View 1 (cartoon, rainbow, N blue to C red):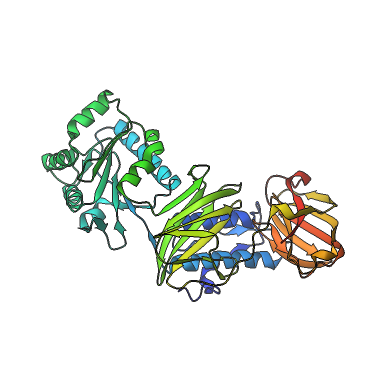
View 2: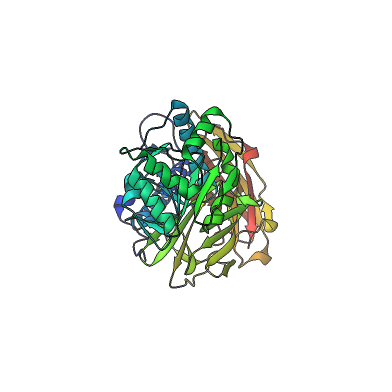
Length: 463
């Protein structure tokens, strides 16, 4: 699977500019753009051209280029999967008031689905009309959907209405919201369209519209779950759907992913699912500027492994529990970090490097010197760390907490490496020695905030 993952072809590498005028963008910010493109279903994950500080060495360019190229290559080799189809009707609305309401409802629906980790794709009425209803799935050339969501509409094409009826008759699930169609958007079969939805949902579409216009409806949030799979959500306002959306959908289908933080779905973590030859890929990205320790639950067959987008290596997924077709694990996402998990037929035996333990931290005595410019700020931390002789042979890391930019690590006059984004840590085991060790940490920030000593705390970590 994905034989070129470690060294993807050159066409997947983004362009990074070092000359020209204007603000400088950090590699962390560009990585955010790449991750966001991936989570929204882009097939290339190629960010816009951005200018970076020309004083930053080529190693940072290579780290970002490798990361973006591997992610772009992965997404180009497969197709995005979704459990839910959201219909985008092209019919007219009976009034500007309803048109505005429907647009707000649809945007809130998209936002809520993403926050609740319900994978969805938008389809139009033409695609719906040509789909096949088989084995409780709505089958299109690109996807097999388990659930169709119809946002508030007052008109729909007769052929699309017939397909919804066929899908429900086959055992499928169709969730309609607030209003039901009263007109045929493509012809004159208005009564036929009304009759289809009246029989499926046991509501009078004209009466729903009349009550909505007059403000008589007060049962916002009521959900009707009939035995035939025709789900009706009577939500008067867009914000009413958000708190109950996952509960509603979970009664209709089994969501393939759950990401729990503090007892609820963590909306800061986005994800997308890609099918490739020989496996299934799940990409997760933390869009928050703070760490998130979450419980990931993924419903997928196969042996899970981690595909490292920075190194190109595949390692075993440790500390996970498999219950039937579900894989459950605890994972800490540092700010703006990501995780690519693959499920394949062959397990990976390579073990990843251990995670740093905050309990074994020793501060590095030293001082900061800061230089602030218009578009770039630099802070240099210089200090001496005492490494006890009894730590000989153990793994030793340097970690900087909460920097606001690219971090460069130097030990005893030798450049160890550069971290353009979190986690801001580096294995220095090969360069430190028992006794005093000169540590130099250089942070280059393209943020509007100047570098400050309070932003960063440098420590030696022992594993």
